[in-house]
Length: 201
Image (cartoon, rainbow, N blue to C red; front, side, top):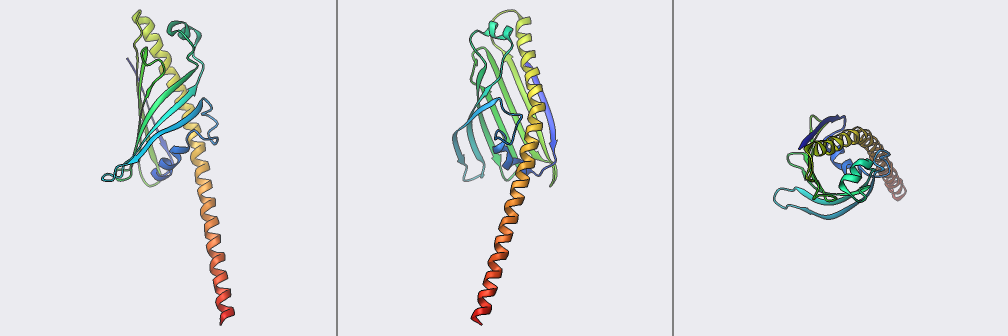
């Protein structure tokens, strides 16, 4: 088994991050083109804790090395991951736990991601993954498979941060524009009411 871990800091509030997290794989993110589909399987809110629980099926398309294809057999250019996330508004945490469905009898990948507020303007990102090759054969081959997947996690982590930064920036701009639009509408409404009151007087 090999372990991958990563931590980042986003200069955005937890509220911004937890909201933008649902748009992580949208067209705003030019670094996530390998994600071809995100399907929500279920969503519920615990009435006692207020925790939002969501299950999603994420389909990715990435080319695997030819040597890995020859070992595992078949086409593994497309893979599916099952993700369960928990948004806790009281403790202000977003926890996402995911596992691979594709080739799960040969490779087991368990990933956990947690977002927590550092302060009012920064949010921490903690990522960990346990990668285990279950296929038979020499230990050296298993090690090479696990090392390859750890390298893929590292590459995706770099692109993932860049992509999510773009989503966060766009989300902040869109929300600011919407707030400004609502403010202008309120001003126009108030001005109209004042004119009507003046005419009535």
